[in-house]
Image 1 (cartoon, rainbow, N blue to C red):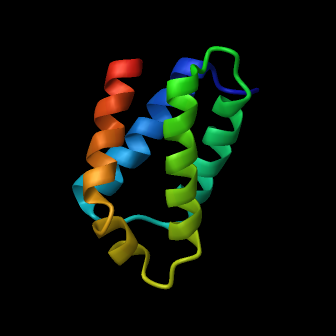
Image 2: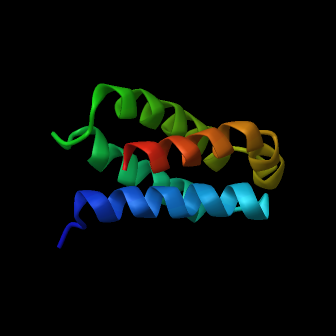
Amino acid sequence: MPIQYHDQVSLLKDILSEHQSECCGTVAECEQLERVIKSLMVNSNTTPNVKNMLEEIYTYSQSGKNSKELDHHIQSHQDQLSQWVENINTYS
């Protein structure tokens, strides 16, 4: 059973918040971000502003998933992670 829009947004925020606070993550988390983003992108509740941010996060997750140094990748994106979490709080 697919999870609801609000739950998807919460999951997205939780993973990004964890990356931001812990400065580390897993390939599985990056893959989960990608799956959630794909689902949110086709949801009619997702506004154009949110879709632009989701595209940025999708690129971040793809780069992280393919990075040899995932923790370094996460550390180098701390400013973006903070901004995305803040934006999600505003949009949701």
